[in-house]
Length: 139
Length: 139
Length: 78
Length: 78
Image (cartoon, each protein chain N blue to C red):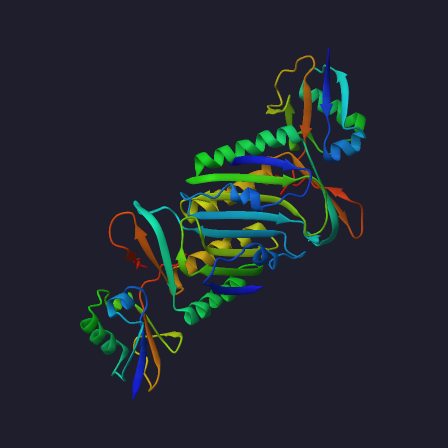
């Protein structure tokens, strides 16, 4: 599997990881982003991710394809949640398999960095005190 | 959980990962090493890991403790298999949770690098052709 | 001669709708400036990217009848 | 006055046993040199680390009656 997907519902990692396994690959690196109970010093009570789904899937797939070109990896995939998420819920998962650990780690890091900077998904945070906010960080 | 363990039997990642979760951590990086069907150009049929178990557990725990000091991470753990392993079997797992992805990735990479260089575990490979070999790489 | 404009995140919240059908504008930049005035968008165009028909395009791309335009505020996934 | 020596990996294979009870040697280095001759170890001492009673120690550490010595060939876990 070499795919990027948006999931509007909670998703399981195990079957995604399974599809990256192979006797040719000796290394697997993964990343998960979870909803934290704080962000930049503010107590977070929950959040909502909105996406421009068609463009997010195109852009996400382009990132996976570019990772497969740039790094000596075997397979890569990423799934990003949208909708309402509770504290501790899984927001994003990236998995990469490779012959060796160096490229597995580097590609995994590169993919999450690119997803965070390029894929049209927006976070709306609700706080313990104060108005909820759409996050539009400076690039 | 902040622990290093040797496992003589196949082990499940899910309960280990579960223990690293927490509402305070937003990032989780993990690494898995699987038995490949080749190594340095030779077809591998299977392998055996031997450890000096008492020293391996002491040294592995020291690596986890050092990672917790060196990196801004929340929790870290590592389990290494010993005994007979088939192709595709899980040989080693490292999991790290942190507030942010940078330290999670860096600590995860550091832990597996240190485990590979310092923990008294030895790999015995069986090949399609030729005598099986204990691997004693130059440091 | 019209275009559809999609709104996301804070732009959607400010516009109060997630899409509008509007007359074909002279340019993407002219359209965003007009919409900023109308809806009170606080993000300057320089902070945004723009997509037409589901693909990112430069701000000076030509527009055609019936196209779908999305102004993309700084993203915050992950 | 004796020590136990533990063998692992290729040293265990060459020695044909995983441990031996031996007279207390003058030094770790003298012990390894004697065992290399006896068992035909191909790894030079410079490639090994050494542990006494379950902890890594320098090669010039003193030895005491009843201690457990392990010569640690280059590791290959992971």
